[in-house]
Image 1 (tube, one colour):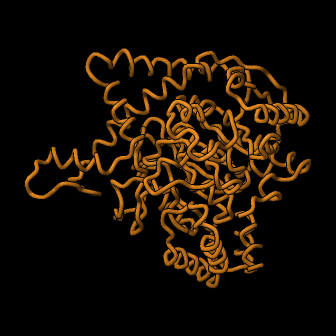
Image 2 (cartoon, rainbow, N blue to C red):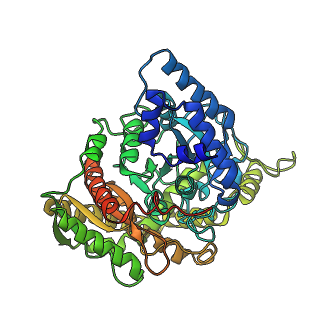
Image 3 (cartoon, helix red, strand yellow):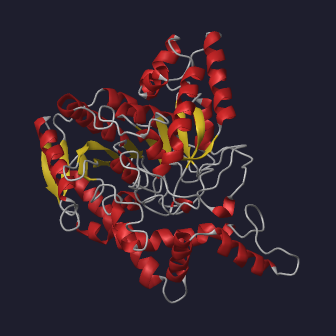
Length: 500
């Protein structure tokens, strides 16, 4: 077991290097992580499906390539936990919902295919809020995931399974999706690194849609460099996705290896503090700002008044798009079917299927979105929300005329208790207060650990926001901050690992 613990504590970059040199085999690495999953996932519940045979087969293929003297990619043989929202050929894809229980996709999402082509070993599919609707992973139809720092706390959402897999050392890499903060907020509350790339930078083909103008897949890891290596693998133009950006991937790995903020102008968003923010979160954020100043950055306060309207705009736009996207789940083509006894009409079967297959939060958002798009209310609600979205985008544009990046707390509080906000949707929605504006504008953003809150000893996240297609700035700043934190206080996860 000692060998397994040593392997699972390695970074993705270290694992790849040791496999390439022959010090470790990909099979050894995969077996170590599968053993870790066996040991702790019953308590954590990060995974919905573990593809043991598939992962070992991928690992053996990597070892055979190396034995033949073939050049291995920068992440060849490194295990990864994949959010259960990306189609994976031959492996169940449920999106955390009963309506797709048992569905086996016949094709790979573009992101899944790129991982396989890069010889990344996919361990399995991770738990998530149903259809990515939630901030705690409590909305999963298959039960909640626990935060490895404290299993009574939430691991964030909707990608809590991916963040928990990292924090519990079940995988060194993971994939998430971010519609209103679902990569960054889980990263913040689990002490890991999560990146929302520029909208359109990572293909959405084969990613089950929640809100098409907001959804974005991205990398999750325990270090900034590991996230950059994964970002480079999954990003790039895809002709199968009409929203995919046809432009070179920014030099994210180079930026992560040469992190510096010397001479950069860093904006502190005025709107991202005040009532509702935990004292320990603001304390760690203020310390991070001081650190940036010490590292050579110029700090500028930035006023973005429309950000105060972002939450309201998001919860009209996202439900409106989800009401359209989820119309395809009718029980007639694939997935679950209820009430089809030969006596009912297609409309009745569809209604019964949705009643049995969708959870309360999905139904809530579909109804809200359908109402907002209905005749007589479209302009008042959906149309107005889109105008606010334009104002938010303009606020970002003005801000980036003054500064290179923006910073803020990632979340207003640390991880809250499982069940604490389950009956209060508005309190739950506030968890995404700082992350939502970036999705509305399509910019790039990262969350990385900036210490532990003194009042509860739980991780706090620092959010860095960059202009569209300037994703490398996230890694440049993130790597500098990470190195400085490590030199002064040690990495809050890697050296003060939670006990399971």
